[in-house]
Image (cartoon, rainbow, N blue to C red; front, side, top):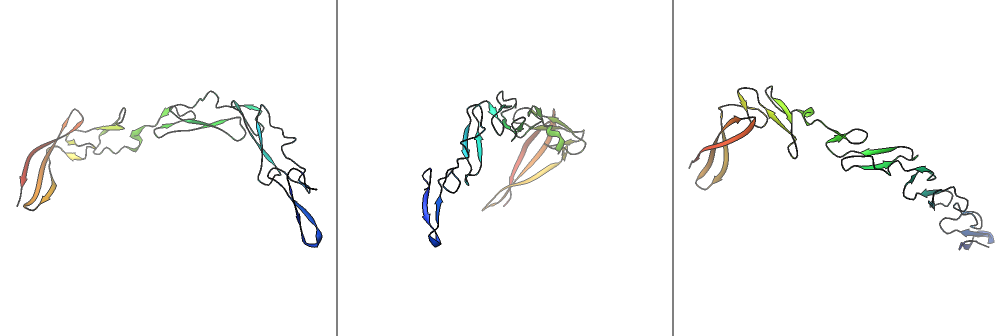
Length: 190
C-alpha cells in the first residue's frame, strides 16, 4: 500500500496511514517533490524536511533559486581577501569587507584618522602596515597622542620591593614626530 519505502501504520478504527521516508509525501508516499523539479544546469534537487518542497543546490558557476543564472561571484570581484556571497535571487552579490576596508568590492581603505585620538591640535597621519596612524604634534607637545607638554617629567612607579618603591623619571621629547622616551634616572626609595 505505501510506496517509496513508506511504512504502513495502523491507526484507531482500523485506519491505515503511511509514514513516508524523507522527500516523499502523499497518502501512499507516492509524491516526490524532486520528480518534476525545475533545477537547471546540473543542480541537485534537495527535498525539504516535510517533503512538500525542494531547493536546488547549484553546480559551480551557477546561482539563483533554480540555478538558471550565471554565478556573479565566479570571477570573485571582491578584493582584499573578501568572500563574495551571491544574493538569494542569484543576480547580485555582496562582499563582506574585512576590518579596514569598505565599498561594494571592499576596495576602499577606511581612513584610520576618522577616529582621530590625537590631542592638542595635533595632525593625524595615516600609517602603513601594522601602524594605523601617527600623530604629528603641535609645538610644545609630545607623546604618542601629543597629550604631554614638552619638558614635563613623568614619574612612574615601576615596581615595589621589600626595600621600597622603584620610581623612574621619564623625560619625553619630540623627535621628528616620533615619540621618544628617555630614562634619565632611577632612584630606589626605602
